[in-house]
Image 1 (cartoon, rainbow, N blue to C red):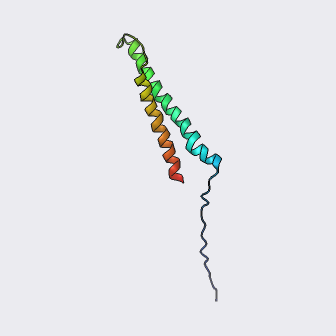
Image 2: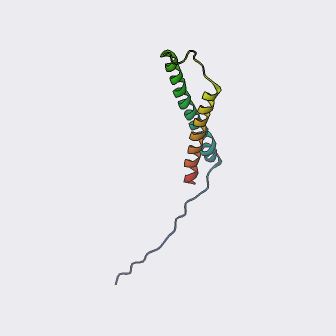
Image 3: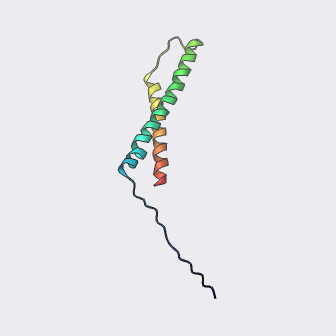
Length: 90
């Protein structure tokens, strides 16, 4: 007679995170990705401004404070998206 035994072992995931990894995931990386978002949107705005100046839709080429504020929204959106993505993992 053969006896088969099953053992139900539970493996718990170690949820401890190092300070270095925490700082990287929730501060450094989101700030870096936020800068990419800022620069991407700012590049699009400047490109459109340059093209409109070249095609004579605008008399003067200028970057206003509103252009920087729109780019800041890009920073905020990319920053929060990255934090939420890493927050979902933990």
